[in-house]
Amino acid sequence: MKSNIIIKGFAGLLATAAIATSMTSCKDDYLDLTPITDASASTVSSSLVGAHAAMVGLCNGMYRDCDYGFNGPNGEPWLLTFFAEAKGNACLQGLWTLSSMGTNYVNWRYLNENAAVYPAYMWRYCYNLIDDANNLLAIVEDMEVADEEIDEKDFIEAVALTIRAHGYIRLLQTYAPRWDDSNNGSAYCVILRTEPSTVENVNKDFSTMGEVLAQIYSDLDDAIDIFENSSYSRGNSVWMPNEDVARGLYARAAMLKNDYATAIEMAEAAMAGYPLMSADEYRSGFVYANSEYLWATDLEAQDVGQYCWGNWQAFNGQYTGRFGLGDSMDYTLYKNLAMTDCRKYLYFMPELMELIPEFAATFGITPEDFFISIDNGGIADPDNMVIWADGGASIPDFGGYDAYYMANYYALGWMEEFGSALVNYDESLTDPYTYIDPRFGLGFKFWGEGNYAYNNFPFMRASELGYYVAEAQYMLGNTTAAQEMMNYLNKGVRDPEYDCTLTGEELLAHIKAYREIELWDEGFNWFDMKRWGDDLIRNVWEEGNPESGNWGADAASYTASEFAGWRYQVPETEFLYNKGADPLKVQY
Image (tube, rainbow, N blue to C red; front, side, top):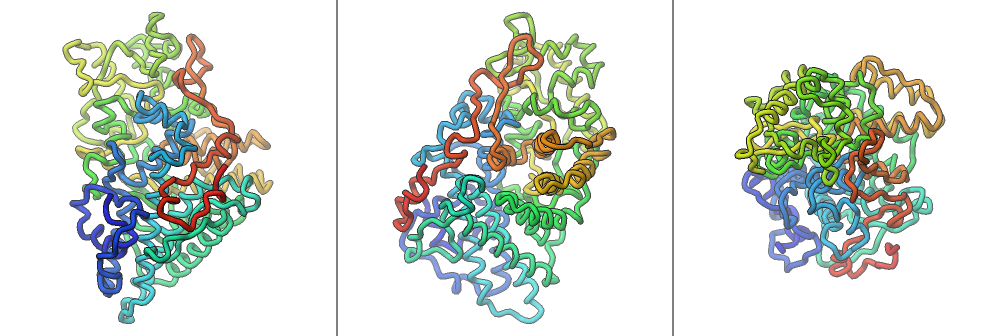
């Protein structure tokens, strides 16, 4: 392991910002203590220029090539895929769900094994992020600057507070119980660290869920106040938090606590200046941040190279094309959408044969064919949910990503080229590194630009916040307000014929389903299902049954009570290095 990031502190932050184009790995376990050899924060930099560089490093540290022992990790986008999508039931995540290597992870084998490496990934990432923020806060707190630099200094402090709060939200989502299972917040869950960690203060005991949420609220209150009173702005740097991101995080935290009134207040304030993307924008590939994005990765973060999220997850990513690892939507979830909804076109489903009848007619495919196996003369492989398993097709070359093409032709152009490749199938061209077979439900939602399919991966969009408002209004008994928000989120911008008139439990189920569809593959599903306390059901494919799902036979479902309410165990490494942590407080 490398030198402990806690000890490297501010110097490490500066290195992140200054050497962003040459970094090839993430910081290792924050508890891997080594002798202090780096300069102290005060001697590393006492200038605003240094603090600003460290702030950039803190923000960009959320997205970079990381060494987790195998291919693909790139910081938070990968972690959201691994924890929030692969473990859920909305997305059949290609790398984990649809490949033999991923079955154990998808089926939660390591959820309650604190000695396994996989549950530790989020823990390690979040505490590195938190400690970086703590180091930056310690520097700017005592920094003396000229009067004309005060606003920039304050802005840097607010960014650090916001990202620290974000790190603790991710920890609660992963390792804490649901609020309803926390005995009103008194359950112990994570370590609360609010100052730079050193050998002297590394030994700390667990804090309760209520204490951590109180710290999150306090940090975000301070950040919002500072942002609002600073004239400094992030400009077009969507990868940097601002006051609206802080409010959005406040809403996320409030929903973890069932604090619905606060969630509504903060979500509505945050999303006010971010109009929803149009239907054309929604179906144009999610490559570039648009009016709806509050927070996203930096499009220019080329240092991640082949580890770009889009390279592994986007429809035109290299690994999607080479290994058939594209992500698919759960068919049961997909069927909630009306045929007039723009999102209906973005997944390789039986209904697509009705939406694009010219394709179905040309190649003689019907919706029912998706449920006839190749052994019975059909086109489905029930083992891995591949369609046309005896064919093969390359990802078409459109001469580069073309938003106009995507927005105005949906999947039609791809389907036509895809079908042509099947018809012209040549066994000499079945090299798996060139050809893929599409999965049942394969998504066209995400595309990327350039050789590595880079994009502005969204960390926060206005739609996420709007669905918090709809859910919270429902939970407070405000049915009309919930319906109004659902109409705002969908009518016209997603479906010209949408009109929400549902009430009671049907309305709540509708809000949940549409939230999972809207935010599909953006890192919410498993976190949402856990927060709701809903059983996680994966409907398996059945021969000849169009009412069945598109999961393979080995897919497992889980009740909300299993694994102590879906809590990842605190990694064993925490107890090896932190002698102040009492393991009895978090055992289950």
